Amino acid sequence: MAAAGAEAPRGETGARCHRPPGPLPRHKPSRRTKWARRRRADTRSAELCRKEKLTCKSIGITKRNLNNYEVEYLCDYKVVKGVEYYLVKWKGWPGSTNTWEPFRNLKCAQLLQQFFSDKNSYLSRGKKGKAIAPKTSGKPLPPAVAEYIVQKAKQRIALQRWQDYLNRRKNHKGMIYVENTVDLEGPPSDFYYINEYRPAPGITLNNEATFGCSCTDCYFEKCCPEEAGVVLAYNKNQQIKIKPGTPIYECNSRCQCGPDCPNRIVQKGTQYSLCIFRTSNGCGWGVKTLVKIKKMSFVMEYVGEVITSEEAEKRGQLYDNQGITYLFDLDYESDEFTVDAARYGNVSHFVNHSCDPNLQVFSVFIDNLDTRLPRIALFSTRTIKAGEELTFDYQMKGSGELSSDSIDHSPAKKRVRTECKCGAETCRGYLN
Image 1 (tube, rainbow, N blue to C red):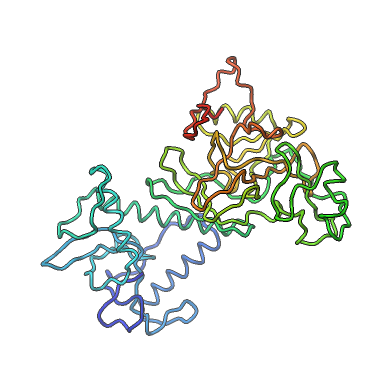
Image 2 (image 1 turned 120 degrees about the vertical axis):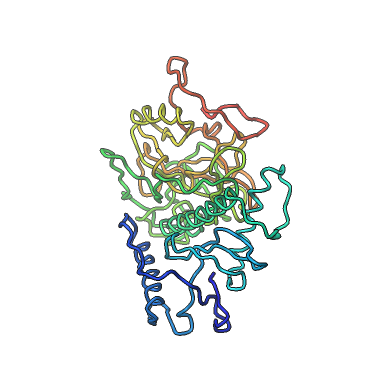
């Protein structure tokens, strides 16, 4: 999206704008990823090239687009002598260099649409949700409206950067999208995306299998599950066929079967594109699927920091006071360890609770066969439509082997109870 002048070459998306003279401002260095620093450097280099009228093929600055400047977002609106003007925030430049540009110079249809959408969203708050036609009245925007539009634009940029970060970090097929059409909440400030368990200091995870199968067809031969005393968990359609509470033993790195083995499902990661979205019922962030998910299909793993049960006791009381729940007790066989996804986790960190969920928990063993440390897999309990929110029961009633934050709830503990907002007919009223 860019601003365009009358002399812009045909087909170009951006063109001339008038900018205050002077060198680019210097900013105090901050902690950034290599990718972010490189992108920032390219942006600054591009603007310096345009300022000095220099071309540079390596960053895409040519004679045809030398006078093109990219619009980051639109801040305000006014009409002067019958001409519509928009206050433009230029990408790669500080807010002090914002300029008022006539409508005819703008070639950024999407940003214009977002501008009016944000304006109408703010105004509709005081009109009981009535829609307002996206027409310009010629009157200047009230300061509160302009401020809201800028906040939404900054939020949109921050969420896009977070979405890019999540997709760089993930190691599975499914894409992760981020959406907030409810409020001005931005990305969480203290959350780090991981793909597997992160052991706390003093805890060792043995992720090297000690033995593997030599099957040519694991579906028909005596494979890893049978060696562990259980049945193969999946049918030929890669759907789970065992009851909750029964462990899943998948083929591991020592097995001679290939990647297409029917007993390698959880280890391949999430196959569905999911969206982290802001809920409108006061439950904060949630997760919805963007595609249809068949019944009894693997959806995602629950990962986080592996801590001792003693440490979980301490953190649990703190989380209760904050009204959050991220603790998953690994009590398949013993009660020594807990998974805490508060700071370190994957997309499952944002999945909300429901007393009538569409996901079910299963314990999974692949390379690590330590029964104290099963992996946590979430499978669909029914067909889930595209756009439907994903949920699981934080208390895991009926699973038989896993529960969330199963610290004693006796009156002597005086723990704060977190109200449930799932809205299900079978709602128990509290998360803990």
